[in-house]
Length: 517
Image 1 (cartoon, helix red, strand yellow):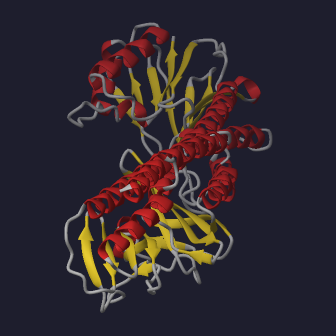
Image 2: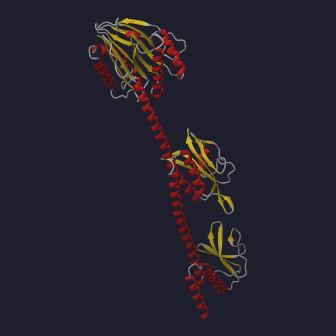
């Protein structure tokens, strides 16, 4: 009786001792074997792949890991979360010690589960802290090339990987942005079904890192839209390289979310810099164009003159000028470069310089137009050309000589109501080599109004795609032919705006008005 009491006291003391579960199980298992008259026994805890031996007593051989068939020839008793194995053919029976063994086994299992959960919580905390630090690191740069290097370096360090590659989605293909630790294929078709298998199932359906034994890849997305993919390979361990556990996929996915934000910020930053650069260039081009266009209207006895220009963008491809010539004559020109924006503005600058340089040596005439045509051919892209109406006014005789190189026909409205058009007499400049140009001539009568314009006026559109047209312009000129020229230009501007009914200006608009007093 005293021996039994001592055993129970010892078992209670062992059970109360923190962290001494194995000694308690061995003592309890030894007491059970003595109580049942069994020479040896072992207690196993169920787990993945079989079970783990927790305690063994007696002389029998019991494997440390319980695999299928390992306990053949032994008697086993199923317990909650484990089993009892022994060699003697003693019928199992319920007794207090066996109940204690079952309870101890269950308690130990619960302790291990709690310990694993605590480990996962701690690991999760470390993981989140690491991800936070990584996020700060990759958010500290906005240079795309440097950012891709930082992302890869942090990714392989975070997962103890030997290799890594970063791909960005461009034009339907994942293109290699950077790699570390080894070679990677240069690009992948985004529509390749193997990409979806690789990213969703984690199966190495594509050998994007040649020679890698174990591959893990996750998508980089912004608002659910693919922007790239991040891949790592060959997780390092004490035994060499091995596969990535499921938790690593989650970790890499969280990291990819941070990388996506950093990459998007870098992309937007580059766009902002490019936009700022273009805006500076546009401002410079606009300033150059403002200096090219006349700052004032020359005074010519017996005539009124007015010029007006409104580009569709910050800079445009329209051009007009007043050109002082020898003998008191005056050159008038209106031109329109194909296209808009900076390229058109640069060609306007070329035209302006060429006209003024050539007029120092060549009179207004066919030769001047031919030289201009060749100059534009030599100095512009093949798809660029200029329509130009160039006129020379002799104030004393009121004779106007003009050349129309593919430009919109000028409109002359007489005080007597007659209407003349200054039609084309040759091809646009820069369209074909060795083009020829025909000279036309007319005499201006008192009260005659001449309007030279660009197609931004006549091709102004309604929301229903109806053009303003030369007929409306002619009617407007006839109706208001006696207005001061500045007021007439304002009336044309207001009328075309009203006609467009809120439609954005589709093309540059230019007017040059001349009236004989």
